[in-house]
Image (cartoon, rainbow, N blue to C red):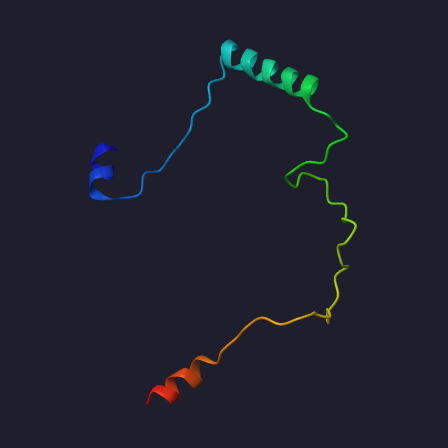
Length: 83
C-alpha cells in the first residue's frame, strides 16, 4: 500500500468490520443511545423513506413557469467579436 501512495495510484479501501462480541456490544449501545436521545417528531436531514413534499414545493410539471432569468452570454458571439 505504501508503494501505491508514493506512485500516486488509487488505494482501494476495503473495511473489514469485526463480528466479535465487543463490536456487537458497541453497536447495541450506539443504537440504544440514538433511540433514547433522538426526537422522532423532528424531520430527518437525509432521505430515508421520508419523501413527503414540503409546503412550497411545486409538483412535477413539463412547462414550469420561471420568474426572472439567468444571465447568459453566447460564447460564439465572443469568438466572432474578437476576430
